[in-house]
Length: 136
Image: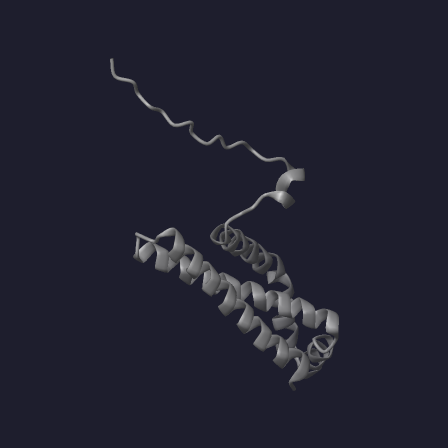
């Protein structure tokens, strides 16, 4: 009589809201979640961006008002957050396109693409922050 060896399959359960902080997500998963979050940030800040654009184009006084508002540090932080969202969303989108084109992405390649995504988006954000807070 032949015995069939069956491995015990891993059991995945839904985690509760209190367990999220302890859940260890792979780097590629974190990049994917941040891709969605950056898209949501861009969508939620779209009315603010459109208001800035509209007001700055209406008149010289409107432009001066927007320039004055964007000189305040809380608004600079808001613009910096928006820039990070745009940079991360763009780079993570290119990452997804690369993964779609080369359909055989290994676990290590996925990790390297995730690290590259973080590095490029954070370096671009740091350069923009330097210009925003230290530049003209």
